[in-house]
Image 1 (cartoon, rainbow, N blue to C red):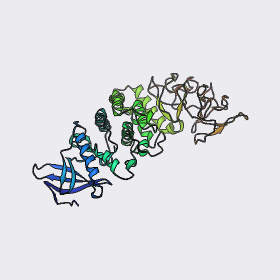
Image 2: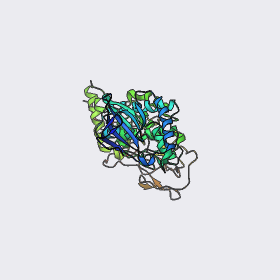
Image 3: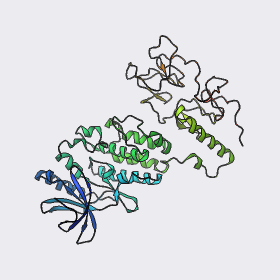
Image 4: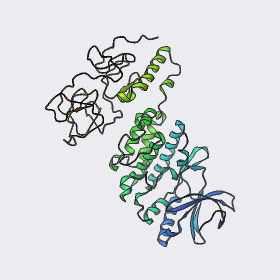
Length: 435
């Protein structure tokens, strides 16, 4: 047994840093060179000749990984019957750092470094198998290094029932004993989502996971799409490896973080300032009621997926593939639809190959279709057509918290905020005067 304040060859054991089912990690000091190191020592009960042979092979393989974001192996060997692996000693793990507040630029920098490390290994056709925040070590100048390459694979092969990996970050197919490069992509996606949202998604990984509002509010839509693709349960829908994932991230890195609306234009005129105040107050009061998740491509004002036009500038909403809370998209208008709907309730289009004719419940349904022969019956707010029988929805929808109605279509509007009706794009009466 290795004890604190004892010697292991030339290494003086200072303290124990962590302990897992496979090995324990100690902070030690090389008494010859005077350098502090981290010693990883397998648990005594797991050491066998077969394990040691696999360990030596993986250590040789890992020693060839020369990258600034991969933790190098300084030394490995056997002392007094104890096998050890020595590596540089960092300040803390990424798991420790995630417990404190991170600046937006730091999160983007960390994400880039994590992707660089795994992409480099995947370029050598080496998978990690146990990517988690505890295996990313933080060094001075915010340098992240990924540890345990090769060691994780030995652990998976030698430990009983270890195919599940680390609970919380393991890909579904890896838990079934079939890991691949796509499994590392899945684990990276979970870590990035936790870093950006503050919440770790849990099985069965329904989209959007807990904390999505923060992700949507702070990240560029293309980065959100990247996160969703990397976290797909079906491995065939993920990035093939971390190399393609890194390329997708780098294409949008410069604009990955959305700046707050109030800071988007620093030299704002009085008109722009007044508009941004309205946007902020509208989002604060009606974001959850109207499911505001998009912005107008022309003026940048907040919009909801169900709107036909921008309530701020009157621009007709074009087909755009923004984020949606539904599992599928209408091929015509690109809005979200449920898998069991026969028709698109927003644009009257038909659904291609509905998954099932079963009727699935949803907390979003609020009323029934007035067609007595309709099979589905249930409707969600601001549907224009019934997704079951395609009948036009009547009467007109209202907005909770407002009695205002459009003089043209009769649907609810917010005259205190909007200049145009988002349902028929007609200019609203009582438009605010610009000051």
